Structures are given as structure tokens and as C-alpha cells.
Length: 226
Ligand SMILES: Cc1cc2nc3c(=O)[nH]c(=O)nc-3n(C[C@H](O)[C@H](O)[C@H](O)COP(=O)(O)O)c2cc1C
Image (spheres, rainbow, N blue to C red):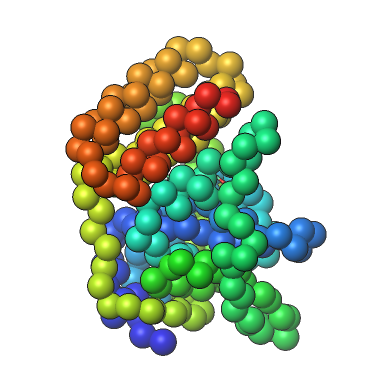
């Protein structure tokens, strides 16, 4: 296995991935969109918020797979979680497993068939953080991860275009809207909704990007159910 730079990932850069985790109690794996930051050739950081399943699972198991994905709509499928009978997440048949033995313990780390690169990691350190921006305050744990194994299926690196970048942002905002709704913060809700609608309109105007347009529909349906 090469180091992170050999995989085309650069120090201090941020990348958006799908993080797959599993809990000891539940057999069903969990997948969620997460940002990662590269620290050096073997270490990186991930910052799941307290209220996420990813946070709970990483805390419990200490392992995660980071899946690099071309299709933006899969980020929506992963992050817009089940509400009122809709949005089922990633289906079980999309998962594969990496068997791993660490300090005489066996682990089965889930990962996604659709990924073009997967990095399997162990937690080596953690720090509690509070993040504040104009879309609210978030409590999270910053987990420092070390690479234990990786799979690279192809060389090319997906560069998202404007429509896809806005699609990713609108999914993030939809997940923030859910939290604002739960907190009954009406002012924040309307601020987020306005921003989402602007982004969705722009994506539609860019046109013809099927993955981004599929995301627009998923985000619209999700917001209606909130
Ligand atoms: C591109 C993208 C990046 C995201 N990055 C993060 C992140 O770094 N930390 C986080 O907690 N949530 C992040 N989110 C939001 C989570 O994906 C979302 O809250 C999700 O529903 C959590 O799912 P879980 O409870 O299964 O972990 C991101 C969403 C998107 C679309």
C-alpha cells in the first residue's frame, strides 16, 4: 500500500467522501457523506457531528472506510436519512467487506462497490470541537485516522463541476435544515431554505448534468418530508 500522496491526495487538502462504519450491535452498515483533511502521508482527520451515526460508530468500533465516489447523487442517497418512510439510504447489496485483524481482534469493515478508491482507517486520536458559522453551532469530535489499507480501482481523479459542487452544498444544507427543524429554530430554517432554493435553481439552470439534477429532486423530496 502506498502513502496518501501516491493516491493523489495532498497534505492540508479537503476531500468529500462517503464514510462507511458499522456498530457492534447492528449488523447493517451505515454510510454518510463526510469531509476529510489530509495531515501527512499516513494520517488524516474526519469531523463527524455528535448527533450522527458515523460519530457513534467510530467511537464504538474505531474503524471506518473512506469511499471516493464519482456520482454526486450517491452523496444525497447516503446523507439524506430515512424520514417518514422515505429515503432508505444505501441498499445492503451495495456493500462489500474488508476483513482485518488488529491486536488479535477481527474486524469487518464495510465499503461501497461504487467507489473508485477506498481507504480503510483506524482511530489513533480524538479531540472535541465546537464549530460556529452563519448556519449555526455544531459540536463534533475530530478523529485522527491512520491508514491501514487501501484499494484503488482507477487512476483518474474526479473533479466536480459547478453543478455538482452546488449539489453537494445543497445536500449539506438539507442535513443542517433537519437539525434546525428539530431545534425549532425558525429563523435559521428560513435562512437555510432560501439558500437551498437558490442553489437548486442554479443547478437547474446549468442543466444537463444528470447526477446533479437527480440530487435536486432528492433534496426537494427530502425537504418536503421534514
Ligand atoms: C459533502 C458533504 C460533506 C459533509 N461533511 C460532514 C462532516 O464533515 N461532518 C458531519 O458530521 N456531517 C457532514 N455532512 C452531513 C452528514 O452527511 C449528514 O448529517 C448525515 O445525515 C449523517 O449521517 P449519519 O447519522 O448516518 O452519520 C456532510 C454532508 C455532505 C453532503
